[in-house]
Length: 489
Image (cartoon, rainbow, N blue to C red; front, side, top):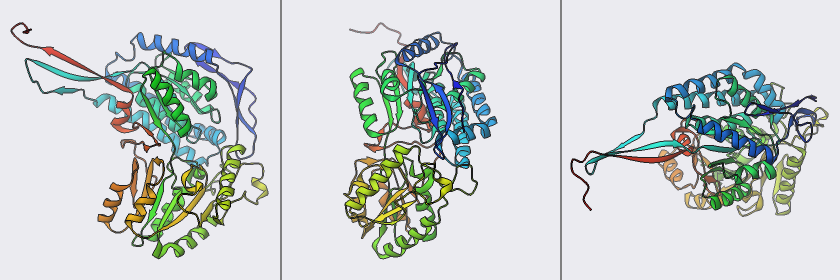
């Protein structure tokens, strides 16, 4: 697919159609150019922040009644849903994800705006009980200009997950999408404008992290930062934000344990393990990358897992039969392959996969086979570092104590899953796992109303649900005096 026309970005009423430099989105399935967008600069960041500040200070948005803000958010969600097929296809070319997965992500993006529209209409401030001749309340108020920086693995969904609650809270938003997948952010900005969002309240700036992202994080006019991506980048952002005393929301990496006890429904557990690692080609922060299987069933379960992994259909994203598409880029595939080589060097046995597909129809794309490795200890690099690909390491465990020690022995704490027929055991283990989300007898489920975020190096703060609106709000306490006499010294 070739799209030579440069897509512009918009700051306020001004379009920016820089012929050079540009960002080219590459279709991961065949290496062709999926789209070309104008690349923003630090000077554009400064202009966008000024426009966003003016839009915020002029008060047409944050001073609207909640039901009036909700009306615009509902309309944004409606328009996203109305363009579902076109947006999903664009995201397929932008990211290489299977078309069905892209359709589901567009559906999620629309639901975020509908959900936070509903929250707008039902959100209540807190009236606190009096302890004197006064009454008091705590009010949620917007920060002002919010910088939202999103990853390449779930473009429009991640962008809506930040933009919807930030706008619902009354903020102005400047979105910096990943340079790997820049196109959906521009579409979201267009839809917001067409839905009637006041000019300047939502700006999408395609650019690179080292210039545009860095300029946003450091800009004195940005009063809150929300980032989803790698832990090291998140740490760098937190350092700058800390020096500025600016609040941050960070959703970072993961190395999630996926646990199977010997009393589990094994067919259900097997399906959960397969979807938990190979969904999105393993390019998911919550992918179940470390599989812990109770020793009594370990060999039989892993043997079947290997056979099931061979049956996963790797194919072109627009093939309805494809269950797994390509990785995002050639460089990322090389990174994944390098980790498999490291695992081999550390004594791991590659039981299946560990290579590119031997299929001429996929030769131009950045595909990698579903991979299962055993023979490693939990301290191996492949068990401790985020690979972000379809690579699963299997590890046996003996009892709950052994399991919990190994499962928690990582700097990450984003998610975990466990399969067991014993509800008391499920509760005990779930409470002991150091993870922001724990799935019991299921995996990788997501609910817009349920808080999401990580422990330890997996992040700070929570998105989704009421927590998502609180993330983008600061609290002001107001006291009304009703005393009849002057206050005493």
